[in-house]
Length: 235
Image (spheres, rainbow, N blue to C red):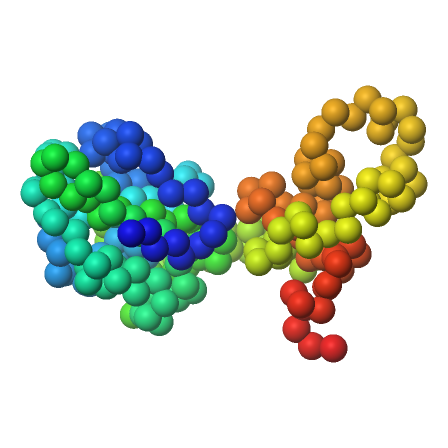
């Protein structure tokens, strides 16, 4: 069973999970054999979302493994899957974290892996407290560390038109019009002839597509969306 919380977050593979069991990137990985310490799980997810080292790499909470990477023999059932998946939207972690949860089965036991994406809106707080992770240490952020996270939030924030429209896809744009009418007006013929990039790369170069999130920006939807009202609130 697979619980996808965020469609654009590509879940890691089984081989990558095995690498994480012995990974030395301790700021990105937390291994535990506990299955009931929800505070610990929420703090870990909050810390990964805050990404204090600013690695912009996903963090991983791995349930069912000892600190040395050996599996504990855990059997992950649907109830545990739902409990961990529910952390994302129970309102205790704000802003809501972007995460996916999956179960991996091995001969030595199962692993439940929660993959957490760094937030673009730090500081992220669990029950009002901002947790961070630096190396193997997980703790409450100091006032100075919270200031760093707040400053980072400002640097991540883009103007509305450049913000990714996360629920949209390339198919929600009038691609034929863009190719045949807009781009020939925007770029000269020689540039278009020599440009071998795919349409997503071309649109990203003029801020109409967000490659990181694999979706159009709001500018793309407003200018070339086939149904822009679907993605925009209000009249």
